[in-house]
Length: 503
Picture 1 (cartoon, rainbow, N blue to C red):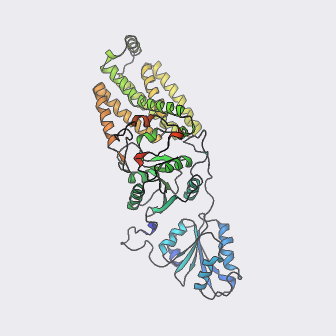
Picture 2: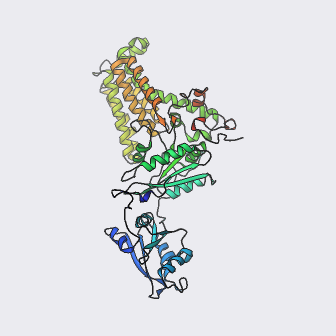
């Protein structure tokens, strides 16, 4: 993987850096001419009046105290740089440790020096040599590690990813304390220069998957990378599909578990989530807490999630199809109850269910967008008031509200929010097919949905594995959580070099 993507040309001719020329204070001043946070200070080395250098940094990205203590003070103390007669001697003395910084890079390319400054480095520029030294002095004013907000943890760890890449890699390192955990960094975005890190465990992850991901990242040519969606749509195999093809997680422990299973992780500077690949549909139905509970309890909960998935997808469509086209399938007493409830309702069953699903989606979106206390109140009280008022006004029947509410609550049990969004879209498609063709329409739409899922791939792994791989016991592996002492091998579909998990 190319680690020097920050020198990739933008609109300039191929082979020329974005900021041509050697590293120099005048060129830096011109580049950052309209930047109010750019600081540039000439320093008399040793306070002897013989040699001058220029110290440059971006205020806020570096710690002002560290610049004063670790760079400015050593440069002005005569005993540290005693006997220096030229800029070349000064540069070598600084490289040998006259400036107290954990990291130093020698730069002769202006493009590389600009990249260092924008990533939290302080530069000492030697104008006569056309070179500079950049010292890493990143500011620590970042969001502290806190509990996960979307993925609740009952028995697991209580920390989550933050917006700083190096903090996130450290959280993963604390869980995989091995040099086999490899980290390959790159930069994406001609304008933003966003740092991206590929994480994998050497000998466990498939080398072909790592190389393919690195190739897709190197192929990206866009101005900015500021959101996960901007990256996901470029690297997945089927960007037009509504079904998620990357696992999003804010929990480092879950991220580390996937790496140890043989998957490849992706961390982006500025985003508090980790991306994992390759994935299958079954992975979106799993919860990290299943590994912390008894295998029988985890198996029952998995079965409940799949039941909730079926209810969320098919219940509204089946109700509409049976009520409109196949009334003979309804028991007599239930049919009489439905007829009596719909006696004064002026709208058809299709209009009832469609309008209630749309209203439910609107309340859900309102609850997500509003602040937490107000959003919870709006979503709960609003649903109760609207539903009760609609029944009393004879606008919809109670059975329609029950069907839509059960389908909506079942969708909330899905572990992945991205999968829940795709299920809502598929629910609309199945409902429309039920309105047009009854049970036959549901059957046709279900076949099309299964064909679409079977056609999806995630970095060489079929999306519907383990059911579509032709291997025995596929349904058993899908629904049953094997006890840990018996789970000795990693998933064969990941093609891991080291398949054995334990002896």
